[in-house]
Length: 160
Image 1 (tube, rainbow, N blue to C red):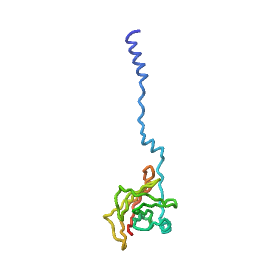
Image 2 (image 1 turned 135 degrees about the vertical axis):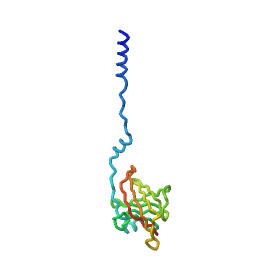
Image 3 (image 1 turned 120 degrees about the vertical axis):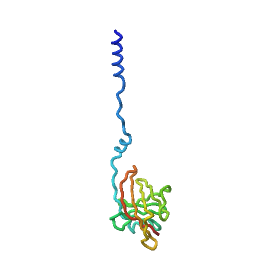
Image 4 (image 1 turned 60 degrees about the vertical axis):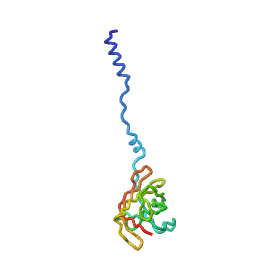
């Protein structure tokens, strides 16, 4: 065989044996797609019967969403935070590393299925009663995958 033909044959065989470029795989996007979309939740008012049943008395910050009336959908207390979802009160542990807020409450709370953050604008508080102050606030609830499932502006009333 001629040397030029051998070189051409080697070049063809080499070109055929090189692996094709693999497409880039976005692992984060694949994981997000596998989890499916975040499912929004509806929070229910924590009423006085709930407060009595679960003994949720004492100093707290109670959040009411804008346009949602006066009923609180979150109670943030020094020992924990509470939401009512599907007729059940869920308790959340305060995140000791998060910002401290009025009456020793914390801005972030963690639970088994979700977490929430109650951001209180402490500079804008206005006295509303003998032992209560109203603050503009924002509530964000996230699912176990840290995706936002609830977001609302509103008012947090803090007091004893």
